[in-house]
Image (cartoon, rainbow, N blue to C red; front, side):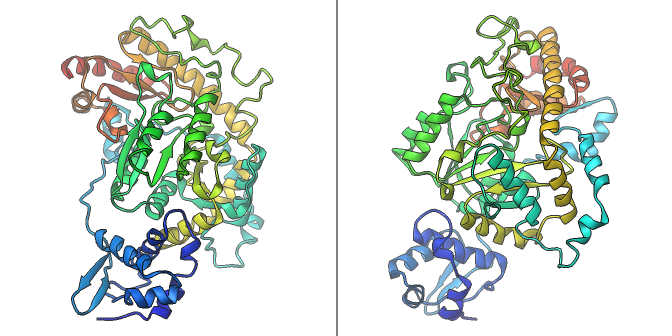
Length: 519
């Protein structure tokens, strides 16, 4: 069996002890696992003895012993009697199968929809004309300036990294280009975070419900998902509970916390100022690593600043304060001089937390067009470097042409925000009116952002409802798909981003199926 000298291994492990959060043994185990995953150290290679590696790395033998133990428990290391510790080429299979989250984008779904059905399975928005205009405005000079190199920019082209950094600085959040990693959309960013910062068996705290793409990435990594908070009338309109996190930390220390404070997917809620401050206190006090996903934050609708959630009850007559906010004329749309989302980028909750203990995920794909696969990670340069190492093993770098388009689109953010806000508010109001008239017993909280309603269907099991509806040509996503514990089986996510035609066509089928799918 091949062996690797401790000196060579130490060169491959350059910088490992200063990168990322967590105890030293965990960081060493992470680094060794990454070497195996990338193929830098071939599967089957025998590692140096614990004593020898400890000496060359300048750490205690117990650190190496603990790191080897972590690798062995994760299936990345095998102890061979008389031969030492052999690094495996891959970890143990976890048996996780994805839920087909992108089935709504394939040909079969579109065929069903064209045959008289309705596709309500995706909240993705149609593209803005600004994308085509930005593509048309590209010149040979734009591309020519970059043709002198090989075209591989693992961290992203400098102009885009600086443009994203400036985006945060304009919102009052100090950021340098070295803190930005450009990714192929926010989904890749979340996946990279899961790969780099989570080990199989690690505890990860998530909201309940939360973005199902994140749930898939974390489950595939073997994380132990622990939900906090809830989504009932007693939760004060917030989608998660910082107090629950505080109680949890008295029993276990999570590896990281994944949050969506603004325009939450799927509920559309945004934390108010008091909730944000409480989360910041708990995260800071407990020194927890937090991943803030702001993918939908640019889709904030700007009319929830009065603290009411506009919850519709069984009578469908409006919110808890007795008013119907459907016309949006509540003075909180950002035109009253208070600085709405049209003027500035959303301020991340983690802006008040240590940079080295946080990641912010962002994207242009939600606001401009899903076909523009440009997202990013904002974190410390050390974490960014760690994520970039994994990313290069997957795709080397993002498309330079897409990035050049993104640079131009950053200048059009205020225009795009205003247009999306106007479109989504009108379509949300129309969707709410449709449901109040056609399904008056259904319940939902008025979303502060995003492209969908998070609807409670009293008495129904929406898992069964979705299966029944699919047989009638209607694709819809049940609430349990967004829950780490298979909860919310009385909920549906109903998108309105493309208008209400599909919802209107599907509603009779959904009502009929709801009667049959008794929970």
